[in-house]
Amino acid sequence: MGPLILPDDPLPITLADLLSNTLVLRQTAPYLPVSAIYALAATSKAFHYIVHQSPEVFRYLDLSTVKSAVVPYEPLDSGGIRWRAERMDESLTEDEFYSGPLRGIFSKLERRCLLRNVHTMVLDGLSVPADLVREIIAEDKFNVRILSIRDARNLNERKLRQVLRFAVRPTRPEGTPRIKGIYLFGPREPAPIQDAPGKKKPPPMRSPPKGIIYSQGAQISAEWNQRSADALNAALARTEDKWYRCSGRMLAKRPSMEWAETLKACEGIIFFDAVLCRGPRHDPTKAFISEGPTTGLPNPASYLNPAIATVALGPSGCETCHSSPEGPAMYGQSPSSEFPLLSPLPLHSASIRAAQSPHTTDGSRPPPLFARCEECLKGRWCERCHKWWDEECYAGSAIAKRTELQQTEFIESVQTNGTSHIIPKQTIKIIGVRRDCFGCGHTCIGCKERYIRRCVSCQNEYCVEDNDASSATRCDWCNYTSRRTVEMY
Image (cartoon, rainbow, N blue to C red; front, side, top):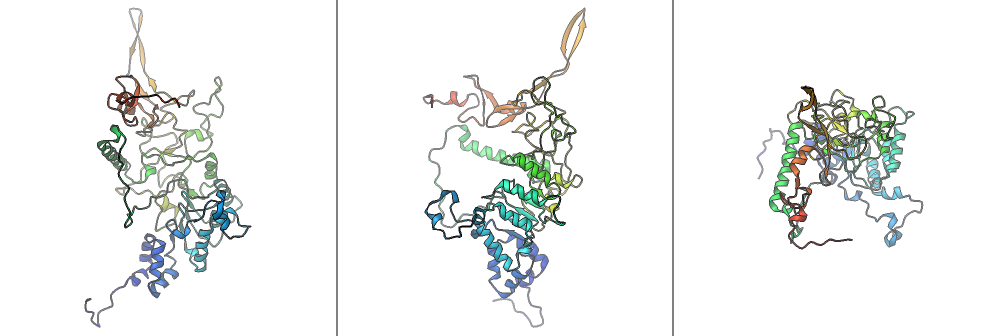
């Protein structure tokens, strides 16, 4: 039995009264999936009016979790009975076929006058052809400011680049394009793991692989080491945003040179979740345009075409000078084109400033941003500990791509009784990286001393982490006690 309400007392505030407040509705709606919003609208006339009349409900629209947005058909290339059984117009193109579910959703929203209210649209993992992206960017029925199409399927990248170049052409109408940011290159946010009722768990592995790396203690240690490394990187960088930490490779797939040219054309107009590399070799005024005069090989400081920065180097800069020739990108001081769109997408704002703003753990000033392409870091970046050296501190090698460790030793000559003696003046300083392990990648001398061992039996070098079934003193071949056979094929 509820509390007794006297006639003179005001009526209690209901949920409809709270959601009628624009501020409360704008802060609440982005956390609700589309199915929950429509379920709420079906409960009463008051909620139906709030959902369909307020422009704040669908300001942030995430269709990646909507089942009706998924294409339930087989690919067109497969042919077969299922494709021939579909009744459709013969003039239907492939892009129209794959964009059918999303076009149906957009048509319903347009009939209800809700499509113009969408400022942030998330289409991650769905079937999004390039023609559909062109409509979102160019047509007046859309008012999207930030679009996310990460891991989209059936997306023709060549046609998408043509769409973007046409949208930012110098002769475009004033005030276009309305879209300001596109999430395309980075990975999508992982969906929360939910155990469905009645779902059976997979059976445990009966015979796990042998070796110290697969033991239970080693697995627990590796997991806690990774957690400790992530916590340490976040504490040093004072932020959870991976672009501002020593995160290494940020993109699973290296973008092509055509994408770099497209980002260059869209610079200052449309922003992406990636940025161009600002290394000195991409600057024609600082790099050498000519080839090597004698060997014919490229000069270490030769000019490079525009490239997308794929490696996050952390806030400390070069290991020696703690800076770089191009200088760090300082948020609030450097141009906005030097900063990527950060993940996850902003829920309550569709501005580029909100999408680029890093969040520090202590509320202090954001750390500097150092990011480069792998070509500018060749021979200078350790893929394990993420130390790196710039062009002024380490010149690298112009002969081979597999650069060796550079050893610099200062000596002086001393004359004694007419005899010249060479005396070491300073200890050997070793910088640079080389490939010591195919699993670790290019590593520095410090990581080599910690992880690379020499087998006491065969005298070959091996990595204690990536060499399965190895021990602290023997490689996997010498540590394996069973009968060994050589497979020729």
